[in-house]
Length: 130
Image (cartoon, rainbow, N blue to C red):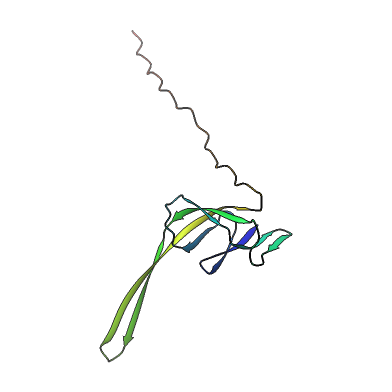
């Protein structure tokens, strides 16, 4: 199962569990993000193509990180004493896709970790009187 959605004039093809880098957003790591502009949904024989969007299909994800890429631009002309260095850092938001939901579907409940009972300390055996 995969879907194609539009974000920031770019299209992204994702499946559940994928990590995709989208344009930077003001969101903390672990925050939930929803993409509702889905243009294609495919699941086996079920293919839905939007005109312009597939109604009701949405993609839910969690913010993982805010990575960046540093690009260095160098201009150089030989024998002219001309060198220019510029740098640019582009920020992104890495999002892990949790689920792709069809119209009317609810997101799955968050997986709760089973609680393990705290181990009670056992008293040390007392030395036997001899």
